[in-house]
Amino acid sequence: MDTVPYPPQRQLSVGEVLDLSFRIYRATAVKCLLFAALGVLAGQLASIYAALKGRTLVKGQDSWQALLAQFLDPTMVALYFIGLVVTIIFYAAVLLRQRAILSGAAVGGEVAAALRRVPALVALAVLIFVVCVACCLPAAVSGGTLRLLLAVAALIALSYVVVAVSCAQTILLVDDAGPVVSLRRSWRLTAGNFWRLSLIYTVAVAILIALYAVVGIVAGFLAALLGSGDVAMVTAFTEVVAVALGALATPFYGALALAVLADLKVRKEGADLAQRLSATA
Image 1 (spheres, helix red, strand yellow):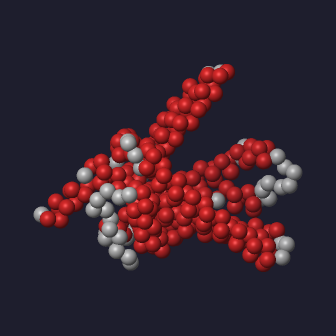
Image 2 (tube, rainbow, N blue to C red):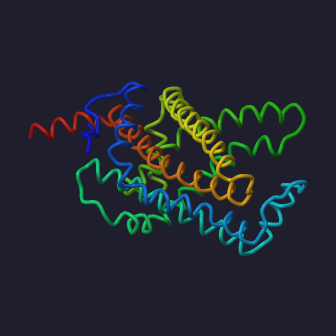
Image 3 (cartoon, rainbow, N blue to C red):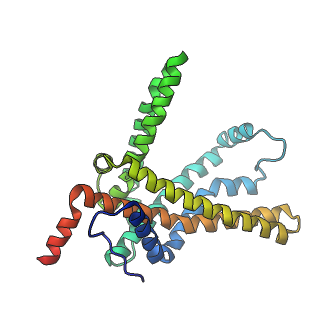
């Protein structure tokens, strides 16, 4: 395994944070692939059920009517909910395993640890949802020109909130903090770093989009070539590629989250000073 300087000894530049993210990814991705693949598959439970039942969208069918029909099906709703919860559990397991690998701790028990944190993760999601709704509420209850102005203000506020709470889940998992504490600490750590974090996240997303686009084009060509016009085979091949891409990308999300949080701790909490003092003690 590559030696990864984690946590960093000093504050990092934008490029260095991204470089640390890729180094964490390279060092941990293989050992997290199973969890990542299971999480992606869990998120596809409702789609797999719909495909087996022949409820996929057909040509000429209204997409909104098809979506409404799915949500009126109790089985589909249950599968959406179960898939979401299981996906959250395995994503948390990926991040916990990455943290264990970086710290040199024994690997194992991450799924059980993630299961114990499910209530806190759900509570955190509810808190974030409430904050986002509060940002949009003024625009929703107003009218006319004022609604347009408030909608723009809500978009700006939501952009800030998304960045401000971006570390909350990582804090909850890595530091075993409560949902309220995690939210408040994320808000404090990210304060004053909006544009810097926005740049980091934008570059990371752009890299992933480019990767998805290239692989998607190649996969589409191969599916059309190997499928020989068989719609079922092409669809199955596309689903397999989508799961594989999701499994490969999931550890990168965790690596980015760990790199960003470590850098913010150095900047706001003096983690580098504490580390140096412990090393010289």
